[in-house]
Length: 318
Image (cartoon, rainbow, N blue to C red; front, side, top):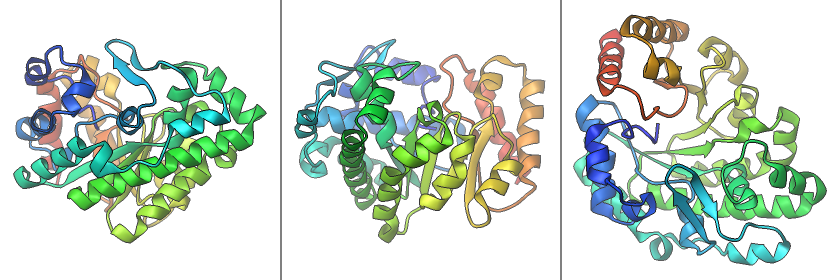
């Protein structure tokens, strides 16, 4: 996942107290952070070191990332006038450092690089709430009381995500992942009605590039089939559903990614982690189109040696 290096001592030493947005704006530093877990673990792909709010930050919306809190917005989105604060993204002008990081990584790596962006609903939740939220009151309020404005906001964010992802592929990324991290806050009918059109727009706008398109979220078991129908080639499966059931929902021809419980990895003894890893592999039953991964991001307290043993076990499994 995109937090692959966050538990590594070398990551903590290299990043130090540098704000994540400042680290991302330094291509040599961002590239090195992206490379660290690949070098240590020998995994089969690299994840670009960036963040889902980088494009809206670059557009001057007033988004910062505060340590221990997450994205914080100085002046949250409230009215139609705020759409003017989300002009079209021009990647080479607005986020040249991201593209330079991609180019540096492509030169260095002998495995594929996965780029990513934040899905419209998840980014909108930050812009509307002003900071991470558990109940998404402002987001739901606009979704139900001002559905046309909410749709316009998500459509604008879809255009921004699409421009960002296309530019990453054009710079050399081999696949892209769309993170709808907080989509699990909505039930399936809400998501289908209010959010899915923006996701479909993004995946449809990437189709001509011929790269795998991955959809990811947490608590999103009920959305997997929708993502597949919207154009995702691979769906990320969290640890609340088995791979067998996920495959049944998405149907043939769609890959699955997951789904080892990251809490188990962070806290359990090795014999438990080994058992659960084998359960995931057995659940897939050797079928093609499985990217072994955690159900979602790496916990900061995870023992790097445990992750190394997992990688070795999966590779040995074949």
